[in-house]
Length: 161
Image 1 (cartoon, rainbow, N blue to C red):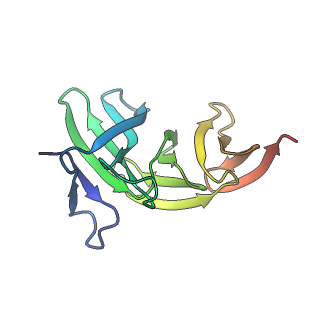
Image 2 (image 1 turned 90 degrees about the vertical axis):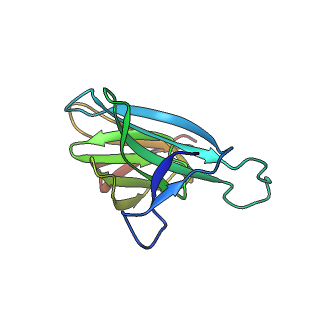
């Protein structure tokens, strides 16, 4: 038995689902509720293969999934090659950051990746959106924090030292 997710890397597309292997260690790094309704939860995280050698490149994979809380059912989800660490909503766009130098944009609620925007940190672990002005801050490994005026345009970077 295992959990099912749409396989992003699968060239056949949205109709294909990945079954996590028994013994996979899944972990959740963030959970957000929909701005429209607290009944919908979007989660992200990753998996580590049991017994994977540290020398194996990319022993981890990740996922993004939306659940309907009252029925405890998976509405949609997909696997990713990266392990997302945080989720942020910007209007109708869902954004995730992960163990790479990219902000991924997802359509909501279908969870189709629509864009990937480069950021300065080599691994971006935190993302937040200012509630009044809509600016987005992204930080991670290193001494830089990127500020975006909108989800696609980096305005400037703050750095220390």
